[in-house]
Structure formats: C-alpha cells, structure tokens
Length: 325
Image (cartoon, rainbow, N blue to C red; front, top):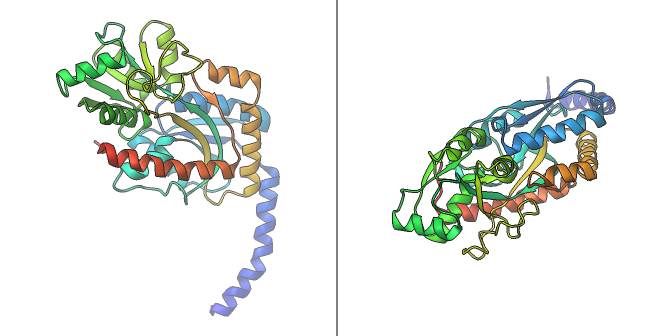
C-alpha cells in the first residue's frame, strides 16, 4: 500500500474511530474497574485506595477491584498500569514515590512518570511519623540524634521499600542531622511494622494512616511528624522542624492516575467523582482520623504537582546520596 493510500484509509477510519471512542466513553463504566495499589495490603496506599474505591463503586454503580502489585518501590504496579489499555478500566493509586522520587533514585525506570500517565486527581496529603516501640530508649528527635551520633550505623530504621517516601524521609533526616543509621527495607509497611513494634528494628518514618491504630493502641510511640505543621490527628506530637531540625519537611501524597491516552471524558468524570467523594464531611473525617488530609484536584493541577515534585525530590536524592539497595 502506498503512503498516499494509507493516508486516505486513515482519513476514512478516523470518524469511525472517533465515534467508537465517544460511544465507549458514554457507556463507561460498563465493566468492573481495577485500581492497582503498587504496595502490599495494609499500608497507607492500600488504605486510601480502598476508601476511594468504595466511593467510586457507589457513584459509578460499578465494582472497583483493588489489586495489590508490590515491588521495586512501587515501580512494578505503576509499570503494569502504564502498559495497560487506556480505557479507564485500569487505574493506579500513585504516590510521591512512584511519581516524584523514583525517577531520580532508580538508574533505569520501566515507565515515564509524566508521559506514560494521565493524572486524574490528587487524593490526600499525609505526614510521615517517626515511631518506635514503647520500649525503645529514645523518646524524642534529640534522643534519636544523640544515639545515632554516639554509635554510627548501630541505630536501624525500617522502610516500606527502597526509594519510598518513608525511606527518603529517613535519608533526609540523616543528611540534616549529620548522622549515620542502617536502612532495613521491607516489602511494604505492613511487613515492616511488626519488627518495629517488637523492637527488632529501632525506628521508622511511616505514613500516618498506617501507624495511627498502633499509636492509639499503645504498640508504637510517636516522637515527631515530618510535615511542616503539626498533624491534627496528633496535635501533641511536634514536627521534626520544631524538635531540632529547622526546615525539615518530607510529607507524602497519593493520587489516582490512568494510562496515557485514556479518553479525556473518562479522566474528567473520574476526577469529578473523586473530588465529590473527598469533599464529603464523612470522607474528610475518615481520612483525618487516620492522619491524612483529603485534597482533590483537577487533572491539570495534579499534572503540575507531579512535575514540581519530581524536581523537588531530585534535589533531595542527590543531596542525601540515597541509592536503591
């Protein structure tokens, strides 16, 4: 077929293809939606995905399946979504790790955090909390710094995986406090917390929703939060900046993304439904009780946020010397 004939065929097919896409968008969703969580069940990403998924299930009148695909700091699940059909039936609960940090941390990325996704909406902003078992000798940021300086690398810290915001919060802490600690990475927060609660690992900078039940249950003690302001869920717990490291700020965020090329009508509808859910007093209270701040955004706002976060964390990764284990 000559190039001219190919162009003519394409021109003839274009209206039909456009009609097909428009019809598919109008009928959306006609089958269950899969929301991929790139970390294990039980962590903050999973908690937020299930909360948002339950609301979408109601508003869209369609089943939303939560699919945990952990590994490689979230890259495995994110890659799966990036390479899925752009039809609105496979979504990702992305994080500051998958779409802010990993691009600078990993020498080879299996996806492009900007080009391979259609941002839908931010969901929540979450501080990390510096926690330890109640039996751990240190009770404050100063105590942790003093212990780390006294015996470099003896103090251990857990993370939900190399390159996650939990890992980078600790790396930023090490850099700003001029201390050395030993990193113990796990495959998800749920796997790490039992070892922290038992004292097998000394400390962890975990997302607030994952640790709030354990703090309230007396299984963990909270020494500080990583955000620039105190968390309403933990008003008596100081920020790390207040407690001795001025300027420290390492909050996490979470948001829904679709594969690049997903019809704009579907992306915008999902964004509206998520924003509507996050604006309800019930959802705001539900997330606040877990230490998360319901956000919501337009696709355009989320896209700009991702780009600014990539730039911000590139500086942190470079300055801290953090590397993938």
